[in-house]
Image (cartoon, rainbow over all chains, first blue to last red; front, side, top):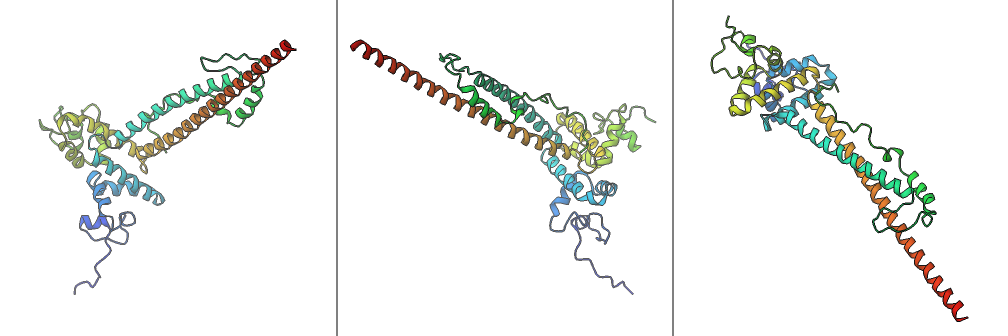
Length: 171
Length: 140
């Protein structure tokens, strides 16, 4: 007599794509819902179901959702940019970071200059002809304004060196 | 055993044909590169990906695959995406710092302009007062 086992009507996206029965212990089921078929399709195309399964088994259960999401992101980016994938995105972000650090260093140096000349009571425009005595009353006011800013605003960023992104980080 | 096999064919224990897709990018002296990509992507997926690219782009693709595979081995949960997130956060923080610093510069500049204008007003008043008192003393 044939088994009266009911057919599963809730196969996960992985088992649907792989055309196999989705068992109760399917490792993909919690993370690849049947209403998100493209997510697994992309991950499968880049990594392969077998490799994804091995990666998921390797990580603690509470971290599997994050793992799947990062794999899905990586697969998406690789499919959009088959040559560089996420490495291309990282390179762009690193370049952006270097530019921003440079801008910040310049801005802080400029701020220090303004703050220095302002507190000294020295005008900063070329047409300035007022003496120190004429501006004597202002340093007190300047001190009050300066105190409202955080101290770090006037320090050139000590960490303005280039970040070493060649080292593999461990988040 | 063919000593001229690439790292991929050695690992896969097969003959390395003259047109092997892996051979230019996985030399036999660096076997770990292929071990990493095979572990994360599988040989078949790597081959398909390289085959679909023009030959002049395959070296870059192989290199980026090796890097990403290495990131994933070191960090199975986030892989290189962890670095992407970290960079995005750093960029956001730095942009905020830059905006704040620029606002501070703008504030100081406006304060300096106001001070400058006030001083000019004071000096003018003083000059007018002096002229007036001179006039008074002259005319008795």
